[in-house]
Image 1 (cartoon, rainbow, N blue to C red):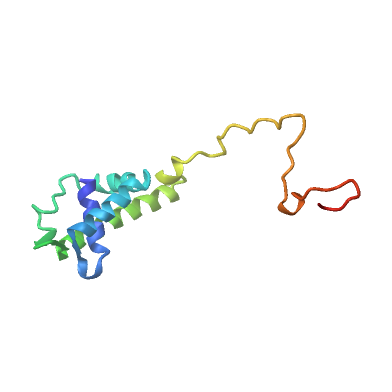
Image 2: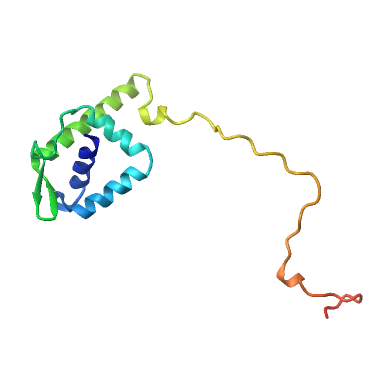
Length: 140
């Protein structure tokens, strides 16, 4: 269901609510390979509409090579997003943190860097210092 909700959101963000199948595939690939935030958000929003069927409920119209979000599809998407925003606001007012913030680590959990090794430190060579010098201090 979250996959179908992602398709609705992609189409709603396109001019005229219309996109080619290739464009929809590209957006889906980017969203679902960018990290856990997008899939988690879509699952959370889709849980409010467990019987979502974008084709069966005619939320998307199909033309040859294109999908178009319908007015009913926009209404359902808007309703789901308002419910999600309201729930986040209620959770914030109640003193809780939104889910996305609660999953993040509170502090820096990386291990400390190892101590610097004792001993000589290699010097960088500079191109202008690569000349050969004679005992008199002049370059050869």
